[in-house]
Image 1 (cartoon, rainbow, N blue to C red):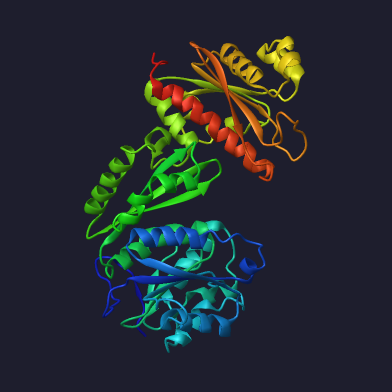
Image 2: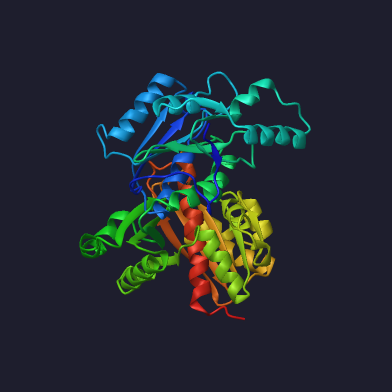
Length: 442
C-alpha cells in the first residue's frame, strides 16, 4: 500500500504537467435541496485564482456514486467546457453509508481502498479530546485510496487527500467550511504550488455614488485595452467593486502591475467616488480612517433601524471611535432624544432633508462625537408619498461646522433589506467624506 501524509518539504505526489485549470465539484444532496448554502465554491474559487489556477466550471451533485463518477469524467475529459487538470471535491467524507466520495474517486482512478493507520490514530485522539466515544463507523474515515497523499484534519475527523495520475489530480476536502478552509490554506495550497505556473493577484477598488454601468462607461477604453491586468466591475448593494487582476511569474510583479493600473484609475474622473482600496467594506474603511485621525462618530437611525450601528460595531477596534447610536423610529423619540424641533417636522414631515440634518446634529450634540450621521426615509414595501415615494431616504451629516443632508433614491422594486443596507452604506460614506476632508482633525 502506498499512502503518505503530505509534507511540503518531501512531497510524494508526481505530475507530468502543470496545473492550469480546475473544476470545483461540491457533493451533498443537502446542497441541492437548499438546506445548506454552498459557500465552499466561492471560497475555493478565490483561493485557486490566487494560485494562478483558472476555474471555468462548478458543479453541485447529490450523494450518488454513478452521477459523481460521471461528473468526474466530464470534468477531466472537458465535455462541454475546458478540460480540468484538477478537480476539487468538497463533502461526502463522513462516516455514514451515503458518504461515498472517496470510494467513487478511488474507483475512478482504479485504486483500492486501504486502512491508513495514522489517520485512524488521529481520529481516535480527536474523540478522546472531545470526551466522546468513537463509533465504529468513524473508522471508515481512515480508509484511503492506494497512492493517496493525506492531509491530516486538525479541525474535525475526516482527513482530506489528493489522488490522481500524471495529468489528473483530485483533491478531496471535508464539507464543513470550518474544516475545509484551514485544511485548504495550510496543506492543499502548499501542495498545489508544486504544480502551478505563476500567480494571479487581485486588488479591489471600492466605489460609491456611481452605478456599475456608469463605471464601465467611464473606464470602457481602459477595460477594453487591458488584458493583463484585467478590469471587471461588480455591483453590490449601493456600491461597485472594481477588481484589478494581474498574472505574473511571482506575486511581487503581479502586485506592481495591479498598483500601476490602480494609479491609472485614480487619474480618471472615477477618483472622487473611490472610498478605499482592498478594504473589506465601507464600515471598515470608516473605522480605520477615524482611528488614524483620532476622531469619533455617532448615529441616529430611523429607516435603517440600527443597521449603521450594527455594521460599525462589527469591525474590530470600533470601540475606539464609535460612541453610540439612537434608533429614533417615531417622531416623539426624535423630539425627546435628539431635540428635533416639532415645528420642523410639521413643516417638512419626518422624511425630509431638514429633519435628517436636525437628527444628525442632535446625535452629535447628545453623544459628543466629532461626526454624526442620520437616516430617515421609506424603506418599503408600504409607506411613501407622492413627493417621497418608497425608496426615498434622506441622510444627514453633522460636524462642528454644521449639519446638512442629502436625498438618495432607490428603486421601489428593491427589497426593504437592500434599501436599508444601501442607505446605511451611503450614510457611512458621507461620514468618511467628512473625515477625509480633514476639517475635523483634532
